[in-house]
Image 1 (tube, rainbow, N blue to C red):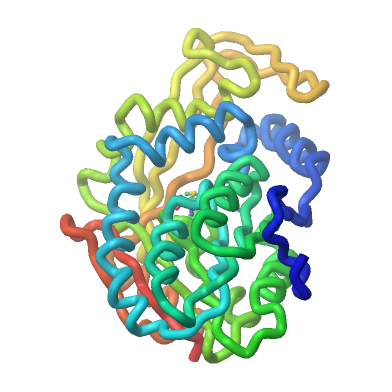
Image 2: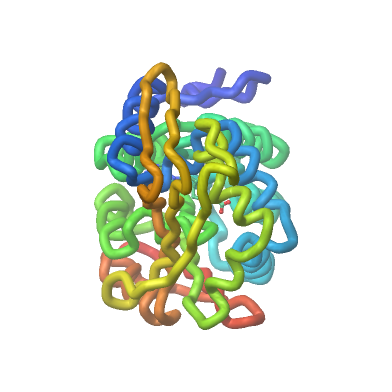
Length: 323
Ligand SMILES: C[S@@+](CC[C@H](N)C(=O)[O-])C[C@H]1O[C@@H](n2cnc3c(N)ncnc32)[C@H](O)[C@@H]1O
């Protein structure tokens, strides 16, 4: 074990700031309230499987664009960021986006030797850490709720780990939208030092946004939490729509509409859903324009140092520093 407590042995070091029983309580309460938040989509094994398939699917334009922009940006990022001791992926998922950066920085003599992943989903964290260990010596993970300030503080402080050299914090794959883009940059800023880096990306809303959701792999992901509690297509249907959310934001919203009475057993709790009832599902947030996304990062006291856009103009990656 290293002096920092970050290990390079075969097992995975994951600190559980969030307990499984708390997650089960949340999931049960979410089904009772007919309101499924973002995290529920990454907890059930059926959802995790569907998400991993979605990330690997050619049809999922978001993941493809995020990877395209990262690959484009990687050479300039490694030129600009000459020194960093860790990459910390916030909402890292299965780690494919952070892996692009780890691979690019591996070639630098003073590049990061550690990866710290943070995510609500234990299963995705495990995948991210397995991926990261191919590139760096030290890996560790935090199962946490990043909407909780104490969890965010713990993750940032573990990533900084008393080193003077910078840490690259990432929020990739349009994840800033899930973290509340109008609040998260400011919340993160409190824990960063002047020399740390913040990389984040986002999807720009367009007429084609909704059509991007209408494919079998995406629908399978949307079905994930429903499949996880035994709901099938014979029990109802999924409906997608778009709406304007807050200033500069759009939301792709979705809900499940029950077409017959359902009796669910969710981890021992009985939950009844009547025909005609809706289960609202977390929205996917998009930005009205590139400047809307960058403006929200700047409003959180960051200075945008560089930015890159996907070939079709609908995905933006920003590299920022605390002001
Ligand atoms: C859209 S996915 C993107 C994952 C990854 N960054 C990528 O690009 O592939 C959002 C990720 O954020 C995580 N997440 C969502 N809300 C969270 C929360 N409150 N705390 C921690 N993780 C969260 C989910 O579990 C999921 O892995």
